[in-house]
Image (cartoon, rainbow, N blue to C red; front, side):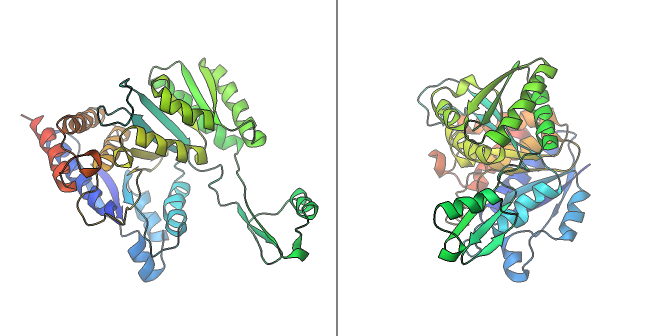
Length: 372
């Protein structure tokens, strides 16, 4: 019996998680996979009522689970960043989910690329460091709210520009931080993952020609690990990687990328495979509680209209199954998605006319037929 924390969240998160839960129920009917799910009320509605984001009680409950199945958060009534930092980023940090796994797969013919060459990129995004740590602030004439100490060089630059505190001008800054420990474990996971896929090379994406300190250290560690694992290592600057994904995505296998750039490139990847409604992801702690979610947001503009694409949430469920050791079941689920796409059982974003619920039921029907 697997114990899941289920967090539908906001907007279409509730709709796609409903479809995903039905799919997990169908899988449990034809296999040895068995689970129970505890629904947790974490999201904008509770925050607007109580001011609570991720509570100690929430954390305690999640720690007792095998995995988390997450929908989406976001609400136009809440200032951007409050829910994301207070719930999603904090959950990743609290449970040390230092790997974000995002597959980018060619779901032909429902991809925008004209070149029908199959691709299957596995982005491994470092999930707890880089520029997403909240190390920053504002300083200057009218504000002195810095979360970290401002180095003397920044103050000297302020004087040089003629915009010091006496002039009333402000500076905002964000600092990216990478630790040797965090980068080393990221590299170990990446090379192990690529090796399990039968690959002999790994691609590391960065911007080391500009951010020389943090990404220079990252390169050094990855080079050492490449030698240790006996594998090849290719470097790509993030801008060059974005271009290469458009013209030759089939040339990439496992790609390791720091947090900020990974967030951007994997959204580009989602569009290459048909849109945000096609992307599942896993926030992984190899030795703890991992969380699986669609990469899209809460989409309040279409919430309640029954046209949200549930495939991303269903693929997140597939990743959850595989993470928990149910690889055969995960394979069946992925085949069911392929079957639905091939037969155009799709929502409006993919040119279809089916509702969220109808697509979910079509996936379930294929799964249940495997029992016969």
